[in-house]
Length: 94
Image 1 (tube, rainbow, N blue to C red):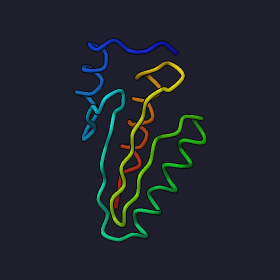
Image 2: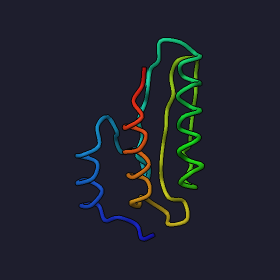
Image 3: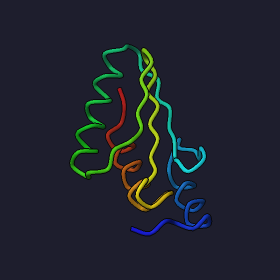
Image 4: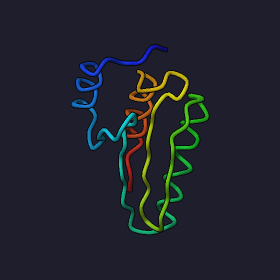
């Protein structure tokens, strides 16, 4: 899948709630009321990532989860990254 142009990235990012650019990644930080809620969310993300065979860089510190996507094989952002971010936004958080 080809890398997106800067214009395409800006357009897609503008439509994607709470995600931001960080280098060659799109990134979102989540805060949860408890560690267990953060882990439940991570497990839901893991299921989506496995289904799509597209996995985020993931960081968890207590109640905080940070997700980052890029398409390493393409050396930057592709539609796959934005598709995954949209799917994750759709699962919601409690």
